[in-house]
Every structure is written in structure tokens, then in C-alpha cells.
Image (cartoon, rainbow, N blue to C red):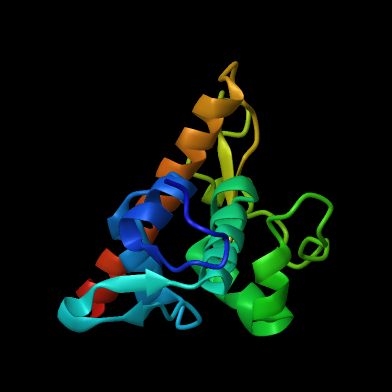
Length: 162
């Protein structure tokens, strides 16, 4: 039985709809204070339709556009929550060109730019430059894995500072 569009969703329903693990949603809650699901007894989360749109926007910016968590935080701060809630929809305005600094110099890239699947990384943005013959689905999965690894690296760096 499908729920009405205005119905609240559990974390498992949201994770299934967005095709991301539940722990990623919990991680995003720790990084994006704009994500505020209702919590009932026992800490069970209930996401409103507006929460789901925000999560779709964050997912789009991270996984489809290649922004890092820090980059999406910047977009939320400078463009606002309503912008991110709609950015995932076809034909919606996207972050302006030049929003992110120029790509890092070649010496700062993790791989040479002529290798398949090489990526350019700057402070707020990661983009796979060459599909290297990967299908769009595999390319998306690689981009998602890269975004998650970079988020983990930032967590480890923050923990090492303490």
C-alpha cells in the first residue's frame, strides 16, 4: 500500500526511496542542521514531505553534481533551503557557474587527469572527469562511493585534530 504524498515517512522508507543507506541519512542529519525530522518515543524518525524534498536536493548535489558535504553546506548557506528543496527537479535552477573555485592544480589531483575515471577535487566539489567506459549507473555508484569516502576522510581528519 502506497502512502499519500503528504504522509510522513520513516527512515527506512526514505532510504529506500532515495536509494541510500539509513546510516547516510543519519550522517547527513549530523552535517546539515536543516534536516530536522520529527522524532517520536524511542528516537524513531518521521520525515515530512518538505524534509524529503530537502534530502532529494542534497542527494542530487552530492551524487549527481559532485559537490562535497562542505560544498552543499555552502549552497544551503548562500542559496537557501528553498533552493536546495527544488534543485533536484528537472529544469530547476542549479548553483551558478563559478559557484565553486576553479579545479585544483594537477599536482593536487589524486590521479593524473588522463587516467580513466580520474577526478578533480577542490575544496567544495568533486567531479569524475572521464567515464572510462563505465555505464551511467556504474559512474553514479562510483561518484556516490567517492563522496562517502571523502566524508569519512573529513570525519577522520576532524577526530585527529581533537
